[in-house]
Image (cartoon, rainbow over all chains, first blue to last red):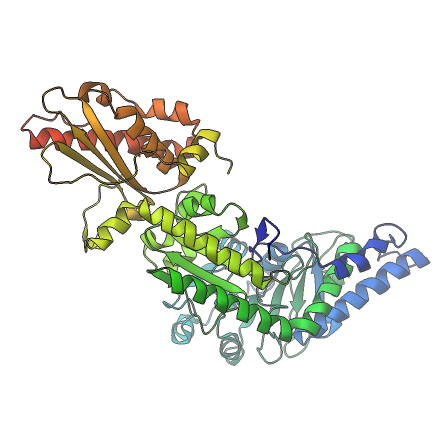
Length: 406
Length: 138
């Protein structure tokens, strides 16, 4: 059976809108275009009703109540709001925030900005498996700590943190716990009650919903979390996020969340099996490939692998009918390899050779088999071309060589 | 990032891939770059000691498509040239030929370094005083 090219396998970056999601969105562009804040006519009521349905759908997916869901423009805004909102509201109480080294830039750069404004931030290192060490977390807590913000699952390596344990530690110390849930929500069971999460950032386009819409869970009971708004205006979303609601996008996000809830269990099994097939297929035909991060605590749809002695960008060039991404420096403007892999202790040489496969709802087994064959073919060709592979085969320890570096 | 046609062409059909015997007195080997920087080039040349003509050139490169293309092109260019002529190849010539964008200029610098290093190695083997290679900034 032939596969349709190109193949999209970069579902941590974004996902296509599920046709079932698009279908429910369409009327809200044209007939049902009302402003959800228009309280005095049926156009507005239709918008409001649609938004409340979506709130219910999202709340249900994460074990929250609808009133605890705030709509935003996306997860970057949600991350900004949950961190800056707490920081500003509780700055009298303390000025210390704990996060970790491999957060998304939306969290790291937000924390860096707060540092400039007088906050102190601890960036916890991660273990070799990519997870936070709970003892190090406990040791980092100070009397002035007001917020712990640690992602549910990492976007590069798919590694899932011990979130329930972190939530428990935060609760015991009376510290708010915020989590970037972008990669986890809709993919694996997330329950804000069980996990003691106070704030959770959610994205639409990572769960087969549209781009430009996201949500933030803000706990209302035990404890009630108050946030300072970062956008001023009409006082929408209980004053936490002003701005006319993106009703169409919100409808899509809600439907996407509903589908995830209904299909997650099956989908996780299917994608986990495809991922394992991909991993085994590559390992069977190639030597010196390495998984980055814990395999046990990992999203079912993620595989992050280093192909020793083959530079990532040249690999991407060879597999140009497959969309994946690389931790290689050459794919970034900075010429620095992935900070995530670096934080795991993956050597820079291996970081340059890493590929992230992100499987999704619409990938098939035929596509996986095609990817295996193509990867093997290109890696083999590039290793023929690689002086490092030749040296390794001659028994030379590359790590002990003296290299002429700039 | 979009690659120029010539880069793609060299990447798909790299010229002169392989290795020459390192111990051969007429073979000069240049190994430049570093794995942690994401680029390593090995360029080897077989040079006739009487005519100083580069009779054969081989390369192997760990690096992005532009690095592979730069070294592939370098082997093409040095073949048949005299040592003196090969030393006059500038990284900017490679940039121009392959239409490399600014972020890929370091690939061409590395290729120039590799030519100089290979010739330097050959000269050393023949007891010829190698002029201190001007090390371009990466």
